[in-house]
Structure formats: structure tokens, C-alpha cells
Image (cartoon, rainbow, N blue to C red):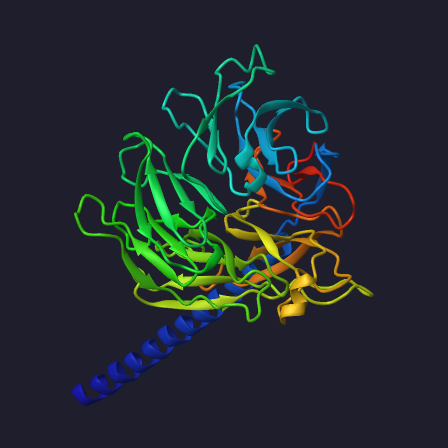
Amino acid sequence: MSRQVSVLNSNHYLVSMRTKYFFLLKGILLLALYLQASSFLSAQEISYPDWTHFYIDAALPGASWGTGGIVFTDLDGDGDLDVAISRRDMTSAYWYERMSDSVWTQHLMGSGQSLDNTLGMTAIDMDQDGWVDVMCNGIWFRNPGCLAEKPDALWEAHLIDAGGHDEAAVDIDGNGVDDLLVYDGSKLAWYNTSDSMRETVISSGHRDHGGTTPRGFGYINRDRYIDVIIPGIWFANPGKSSEGWKANAWPFKSMPKASYGRSIRSWIVDIDGDGKNDIVYSHCDTGGSRVYWVKNKGKGKKWESYQLADPPTASGDVEGTGSFHSLGVADFNQDGHLDIFAGEQEDPDTYMERDGLKAMKPRGLKERGVIWYSDGGKTPKFEPYVIHIDNPGWHDAQLGDVDGDGDLDIVTKIWHSDGGDYHLDLWRNELISH
């Protein structure tokens, strides 16, 4: 009798275990189907907003190549975003007061001879008086602080032995006040706004064209001090240590026979959401530019590089890519994932082909503004979406919510026109309809 009970108990145990495994496998299958369906629905629901173009200025002062900037911030303290640029052939700087998306008023800021060689500009409170000033090449303009009442007031000009292709406002020393960061392709240095603009050279002797803007600075090794990158090197901020900035390698992929040598637009950001800042960069100042993101696999010691797909070419258009001299990282469609924007610049120069280098773009190529939308995966995939083809092209674009509707817009400008017009442009994101 006891043996029969034992067999019955054994059979009951086997049936019970089979039942448990059946329901476990069924649960796993249902979960897999649910996740697959959720992924499909999520992909179906991704929004690709339209973009509307407005001229901030359809005919910039002057008639030749060379527009410095862009500065994109609230200059007059009225709560909305204004724009500032400079023009080389006019040796003058201008700011544009926003009246509406389609109406902007130009005001002269001031003039200076060094503006004939300006590209990089940045918004920064140089004298710490609470008003945003504008730094150009070798000269900065002091905000008069009365622009809301007197928008035509001239800005006091101050000469400074600093400036270059890349300029940015960054709190380098961690004291809560922005300093000036400048890279001229040879010397990378920062200037302490809390100490009479004292210069500290981070590194020098390089042979680049550019590399640190618009956002090539951030926390790479996860301490509390801002690190800085140039092509192929990131510099660890020593903080309060007496040691210098330590140079570390990151896997930059150079462009062979680049028009102006090594040059990138860069952005330090946690692009894959794993808590570690990565590097996003685009080649610039050369035809054949590419866009990459580089995964930080641990305090900047190990990296893995991913190239984004080239933007699609419309039927009948010239294939290839130009110079991606505009770069931005943001959640443009507000799906919770960071996307990557890059824009090709207008530039008809081909003279460098005589030296065996690439032209600034393949002959006949139509410039494109492109957003690579992220799928939000653990190792995100990016789908290129062209928001505009042909002129106006893109150069040193900046991101911001111009119309205050909660989504990010793009302001950009001309460097060297291939269509005869020198212009300053707003691209309005229509994600939130007007």
C-alpha cells in the first residue's frame, strides 16, 4: 500500500512539474509576442515632424564669403531667443531681434578689424555682469544691458588675444561660472573669466582645422570636471590637481585627402542611455563627410565606433556627401530617444583638387539637412531622414526653441554661397503644430 502511495505521489509530482513547465513556456512565449508587438507598435508610432523654413535675413550685409557665428541666446532679456553673427567683408557684427518666426530686426553690434578672420563665436558673460556678451575672433562685444529699451545701442568692443575656428562657453574649473574654451586647430586653451581671462593651454602643436564645437566637452571619466576633445584625443581635466591635462586616445576615423585636413563637429552626450557619455562627431570642411557615434565602454579607456548610414540620395541627384559643418544632438520628435542632426554646407570650392584633395562637395551635389532618428535600442540604430534638399545649405547650426512651443528648432547660416545669396535661416520644427 505504501508503495502504491509512493508511485501515485511520484506521478502527481511529474504531472505537477510538467504543468508548471507548460505554463512557464507559455508565459515566456506570450511575453516574447507582447514585446514584439510593443516594438512594432512603437516603431509605427514614431513621429517624423515636418520643418518649415523662414529667413531671418535673406540678404546678409556684404557680398562675399565668411559669416561668423552663430550665437543663439536671449540677448535683450525679453525671454525669447535672439541671433548674432558677423560678416568678414563688413568687419562688423550684428544681432537679430525676434519679432516673430518670419520677422526679425537687424541691429549693428559693432565693428573690428579682426572680424575679417572670424568663424567661431560664442555667447558668454565675459565680465560677469549678468548680461550675455558675444565673443568673436580677437574681439568681444559687451552687452550694453539696455537692448530691450534701446535695441540699436552699440556694444562696447574689447580686444582679446584669443579666438579661432572653435569657441565655446564652458565651466572648466567647476566654480559655477562659464569660462572661454578656444581651439584654433593648433592650440587648445581655456580662459578664466573669474581671473582676468588668464590663459591655460591644454595642449598645442596640433594640425587640425577644428574639433571642439558645438559641444565637444563633457564628463568622460565620470569625475566632476569637464573634459575636452579634439580629433582622436580627449583631455582629462585635472581639476584642482597641479598636474596638467592628460591626453587619451579615442577612435577617430579620419577622412583621406580631406579638403582642409582633419576637422570635425563634436558632441559629448550619453547617446545610448547607459549612464556613460559617448562621442558623436561629423567630419566637416571636406567633401565625403561621415557621421559617427563612439560608445564609451568605461571612463574613456575603451571605445567602440559606429558609422551612421549616409543620407539617401533623391532620384537623379548627385550621390555622395558634402561637408557636415552642422551637428546637433536632441530628441527632435520627443519619443524619449536622442537623435542626431547634421547638415551639409553650401560651398562651391574645388580648387583643392589641384593638390589631390577632395572638393568641398561632389560637383552638383544638393545640400541636405538630415536627422538620424534613434530606435532607442540598447545599441541604438539610427534611421536617416532628410528634412530638406538643396539650398539653403547649413553651417554651424544651433538648436533652440525659437517659438516657445516646447520642441527644438534649428537656426543656421551661410559660409560660402553656391547660389549667390548670403542668408541666415530658421527651420521651425512642426512636431507641435501651430
